[in-house]
Each structure stands twice: as C-alpha cells, then as structure tokens.
Amino acid sequence: MKEFTPMLVTDLRSYNPKMLIKDIVAGIIVAIIALPLSIALAIASGVGPEEGLYTAIIAGALISIFGGSSVQIAGPTAAFATIVAGVVATSGMEGLMLATIIAGILLVLMGIFKFGSLIKFIPYTITTGFTAGIAVTILIGQLKDFFGVTYANGASPIETTEKIAAFFENISTVNIWSLIVGAVSLIILIVWPKISKTIPGSLIAVVVGAVMVMLMPESTGVQTIETTFGQLSNKLPTLHIPKMDMTLIRSILPDAFTIAILAAIESLLSCVVADGMTNSKHRSNMELIAQGIGNVGSALFGGIPATGAIARTAANIKNGGKTPIAGLVHAIVLLLILVFLMPYAGLIPMPTIAAILFTVAYNMSQWRPIVRLVKTAPKSDIFVLLLTFILTVVFDLVVAIGVGIVLACILFMKRMSDETEIKGWQYEPTEDDSYKLADVPRAVRVFEISGPMFFGMTDRVANITTKEYTKCLIIRMRSVPAIDATAMKALEDLCDKCHAKGITVIFSHVNEQPMQSMQKAGLYEKVGAENFKAHIDDALAYATSLCGE
Image (tube, rainbow, N blue to C red):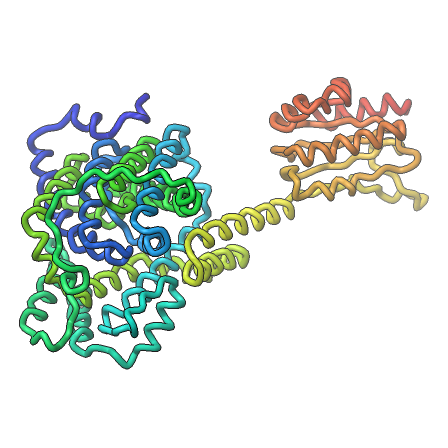
C-alpha cells in the first residue's frame, strides 16, 4: 500500500530540526510569492480576491497533507481561469462549487483506480495547444484593466471574442494614469528578477503600484481592488454545502470533467518537474487522490479549483523546501495574512493585477516549444496543436480538449493503419517464363501481415485472395503485436469463405495477444489447433503434405 501512503507520513519518519527550519523558510517565501498570484488569479477567474486566498489556504494545506509529492505547492493556477470565469458567468458560484466538488470526486476515483499513469496518454500537442490558448485568453481578459478602459453601460463580456470587440469599441476611454501604473508595474515584473531572486517581483510591483495610486489625485480614476470589489473581508472561510440541483449538475458536468482533467495533468506535470529537480519519485495515484480531496475542501469553504502550481513548487525547492511541512507553512502564513492584512489588499491597483497576469500569461504561453514543434513535428501534430489553440481562444477549453483528443486519436489510428501491411509472397519467373512461388507448391498461397490489426485496417484483409487451384492459405502473423474485435471478425469472415471453397487456412507464428484473442473469440477452435504452426517452415511443410506434393 506504499503508493497510497501520503508522502507526509513517509517524510515524518526521518524528520529533524534542520529540515524543519528549511521548510519554514521555504514556506514563508512561497507564501509571499503566492499572495499576489492568488489574488490576481481569483480576479481573472471572475471571483473575489478572498476566494483566491481561501483556495491557496484550504486546498494548499489538504494537498500537502495527503499528497504524493514531498515538495508540491498547490493553489489556484492560470489554467483554470477561463473555465472558472465561464462557469461563474453562466451558473454562478453555486454552479462552480458543484463543478469543483464533482471534479474532486472524479480525481479521487482516478487515483483509487490507478489512473495516474494514464494521464501520459494525453498528447503533448494538446496540452501545449490549450495552455497557449489559455495564456492568450488571460492576456485579452486583462486588457481592459491594464489600459483603464470603461465599457459602456457596465457591459461585462464573457467570451474572448466578445472581450476583444468590447475593448476596441471602447478604446477611446483609455485612462492614461492606469496605463502608466500598469506599465511601471510591468517593467518592475520584467526587471526585478535580474536584481533579486529572493523577493518576488510581483510583491514589489504591488507595493509600488499601491503607493503610486495613493499619491495620485482621486480624479485620475485609477481602479483598485477595493473600488472594484468593495471592502475586502478578513473573515475566515466558512463551510457551505451546496444544494443538489440535478438540472444545474447536468449543465456543469462537462466543466467538472474538464476541471478534473486539467487538475490531474497540471499536478502530475508539476510532480514530474519536482522529481527532476530533487532526484526523487512522486506517488501519482496518491497525488490524484490528494488533488480530489483538496478541490472538494476548497469548494466547501468558498474557494475555486486548485492544482499543483509548477512555479510555486519550483520556488519551494529552490528555497530549501524538503517535505510537505513547507506547503503547510505556506498555507498558515497565507491564513495569517488573510486575518491581519487582507483589508490592505484593497489598495492594490487593477492595472498592477493586469500586469501580473500578463507575466503569468507570457510564462505559460510556451511559445518556444510551439516554435520547435512547428519546425520539427509531423504536419498532423502541428494541425492538432493549432486547432486546439484556436478552439481554446475562440470557443472554450471543453470543446478544445474534446476535439483535440478525438482528432489526435483519429490521426494516430490513421498513422498506425498506414503502417499495417498485408502482402502476398510474390511468384518468380522460371526459365520457361512461367511463374512459381519459390519453394512453395502451386496450390499454396502465403500472405504476411505486418503491424497491428485493428478496425482502421480491416479493409486490407480483402487483399488476401486465392486462386481457383488454391488448396491451402498460410497467414503469417509474426509481425502482428495485437488484434482487436473488428479485425478478428474480418479474419473469421475470411476463414469462412475459404472453408466454403474447401481451402485450409493455416496460421503461422501468432503472437501472444492475437492468440489469446483468437482463443477467446472461438476462431482457434474453428480453424483447429493443428492448423496453427509456430514457424513458417512448419506451416509450409504441413501445407505441402495437405496438398499431396
């Protein structure tokens, strides 16, 4: 049961004061990094700043307690921003709560049924495509606040295309002071990491932006979190159980599945990155269970979906974090900030929040991997990448992931189908210009199948033909690793046709999986055990004896 043991339990067996000090220092630093990010991502998700902290505190603590990684730091991430905003806009907070709880239950089930290793079957082109698409949607969604644009009649567009249209329709309302605050914040975010690696640039940008707005006259009209969302609350999160509305549940099910898949992908990717940095190995199934528990807990206490955050996990490792205690310290520090400092967060300018989200979008855009893929990948993979990206931006993540996976599977099957080949042994000319099959009686036909036999290639079984003088048909299957039910049906039909013509079918070198499938389907018994040979030479000798030659 080791794979279902939380890493915290394992790490505490060898815990010591030296590790505790490192975990405390790392946890405090990661909390400082997570503070502005949690607020910014909550705002980008269409909820209040408090919900971002609730998520980082509740989900962060639960995932550290139950997680399968020693150094994973969890909380709200940019991957969820667009889908959460969509759910909130259409179904409200109650719908988001139900979607997050269902996603959490799905994640727990995925872990229990050991789906941790199956996440790797989601193509890299799809994850790259929708991640870049999310980055673009986040950037577009923050143009309004960065430039201080005012929408007519308080319009609040939801779709990305609507946001672009609304921004350019109201471009004349740009607030130059908001643009200055946003530009200064963005410059700080770009330049500060070159000056200091210890203090996060987002914290410096938040402080500088707040001071700038405090020194400006009120007439400048630069929006802050407080003027946008009202007075912020420093109350602790409270338990709220949503109503079980079946109509609402049916409407948010696709979003719940998408949240679960995203949480699984991003958390396990973060674990893999952490493994590479620490030379360790995470427990993927336990991590999925922890992600599920964390998301259910976050939803019940007013938070939004959460997952492992790669940037915060990397920061934890670089600052000396060794065990999940660092994640717990991170959650406790954020809780103290919520209680004692949350009202001051209202002073943060919205252009600064937009600048922080611009850098988040840039960091997750993956433009370098995309350029490399466009240069090196097959055209079909590039098509899947671009289509997933476009669908994410124009429609939503649910459509993008669904269409992307289906298309990737179809293209993969096409590629595998192209690799499967059925060829007959060729007759060679003799001295008298007649034709014969070398060392094979005239009444024997030999066909060799190469590659997997599945529904995408069954039409090629029609290439297996016989002559009027054929008495035996040998099917050589040494290069067939697997066979599915559709291909099995095609073989059965072929055997039936040959039997009707009085032709004996002989199978040569059938591998383990195809043999098991034939036995299970009854084809082995129908053809007869004596007509299955281990080697082509045995099959040819047997066929020769049957033909009397």
